[in-house]
Length: 364
Image (tube, rainbow, N blue to C red; front, side, top):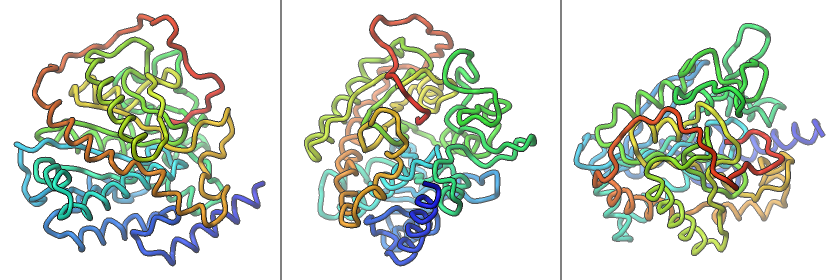
């Protein structure tokens, strides 16, 4: 089995090296992600700008692609919308989707009036890889299923789960998140202990008109919204639910696949969307991408490599192409100020019948 994963990883790297950076017939490796951002910036210089929002534990840059009609100007009249991939290193599909969204927004700008309006009235930020060190590690070693970043914990173990390292409800006892440094869900020595989570926090807090945060994970075909740490409804639930159901219906209309709306797969602490909903009351959602959850195996992380080469072309069916367009329109509606930011630190009231899906291993 180990030999299979080594061979699969090597083949993936060799194939990726030969592909155009905007070719989605196979996964992008770290270099091709950088090349894709550079190519988009070169091809659309009046609509894009590359920004480094921070550096990783190992010193790698964390890059964002800004898409807007005047990318070199910060326009406070335009809402900022942030798409983030790869909190977790092994979730390669979560890198492909934000990249794919960027390609189609830019390529459709001059031919689709709705897309043009979205880009003209919104500042869109695409961050394909937050966990740049972990992503590199899964691509260059036999450890394809590595989840965390690559922090040296000083005791022989490595890594912090970036999606357990946000400060809201950090390290709550009795829910998903671990104080054990070697565990996959180790939440770190303190909130925002990691340069990657500090980078995304500081970047987003510095945006002048932040409206929405979307983070991609894999896998399961689920659409999730706050809260993650409890089964109680979050304040503003009707708005969150409306965004989720409309998004799900748009994806289904294009791809014939209906994602399941869930509140959380399992309770988890220090999670990104909980932090941003609590902090800023922006639309904050997590999408668990294809394939559908299969009962507990890790094979969903290898969605391409368990199929024949021709199946790689299914990537365009996996990507929810219409997602950006719908979301931008809804964000403009949402940004009317009808929900005011308020802090809600403890909502532990259980809702009957709202239980986690059994047999889960850590994903989002």
